[in-house]
Image (cartoon, rainbow, N blue to C red; front, top):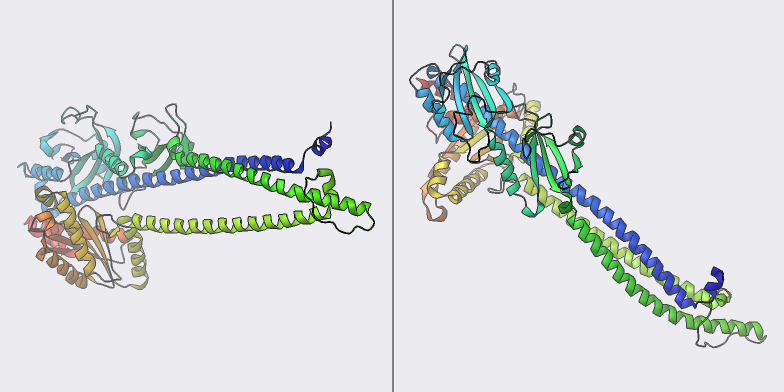
Length: 576
């Protein structure tokens, strides 16, 4: 029996039902597979994008903290007030270094060595009298400000108190040359920064993410060896994987999606080329896509079942008029006087379908109805897609606002502030219209946290930020740089105008009574100012001079305003 003979023996309604079922199953299969592939690809791209943001957050934090530490070491080494004390043997220099270590416990060791490499003073007296002339930090620090990559402790391993978990000491060394009043180099100020600081940064970034994302972060050196993470010193990724930026890490313990970025340095800190790798299990990244594929398949099967039942009913109804029309055509062909007959009820056969004009017209009408139905469904799908695009745009805008705003104060963060500051610097260099930078720091902020709690400290930061933001013009910009430190960019303002503005803010804060959580106290701020100069390579130079002026304000008793030009004279008075 041929296929034609087999088809001739099946009623039309049954053939329509079978064909519709086969088409529905094929469409469902293609849709499910295509949707699964598309959803998997989109989920992977989204996961890689999110992981890249996490990696960039860690890299930016590492660059920021290292740049701040290098700046701090250089400022202390250049502090004129300390010049008479570098080579003395009274022990006063050790006290200064101990206080410096107390401001940042991550400083595992701070010491000063003379030109011969002999340690003259150090925190806790550790290594005093020892010769460090062969250490890389001393050899490079005697020439210029230097940063040495992560390394294991050698001389300090047996002298420092061991970690509670027994892990060995690892440090990042920072050093800067120390000069006397005549400008001659008399020694090196060196710092061993505990590498555990980087793990704190890693944990803080991960704690800001949802735990169910199961994300992890690994830090590598420029050669791809692990500096922070499991298997220290190992090279878990190939050079091609790291160069790709985003890749799949195929591992026996489980496959992961990975995105990488490198530290780039900041300001005078050129960076050490650390590579930050953010990881997430593939199963976690694709969980939403897999759920969506299953849901689409189930919905498709349900729609196919309903459609097949509907088509079966429609086919049964269509077969009756087709049979009636076939009989009418037969009568017209057999009866010379017959022109048209009334409708009769019955079921037609496929062999008589091609000879029935009325059946053809009915098919045309059905096709038009189907076309209108498809057009309506397509229009509905377009509206749904447009609505999704609008919601996605709103979500992207909200994400941009969150990325550019400090969560505690609502002010700009460093990431959003720096492009605006660079634009202002370009405008200054083109038109020579004055701009000034103010660095503002809350005095004795640690004491506020210790006496009144961190919630009170957060409220002080918020209120100081509000005082500053209410005082500036719409053309000026204010940002929170981190901790209790703020930066203000004043456009069309010279140093004299900036001083008036700074003094007004300082006085407002000093007169404000802070009452967080039932407490009642006052706080003060110190302000450093600097005006942009044509010799400044970029805005970072102006910010650095304002920061040095802030350091002079802190050294000069706090609750005061200092400009970069007056900071040197103040330091000389302190030294006298």
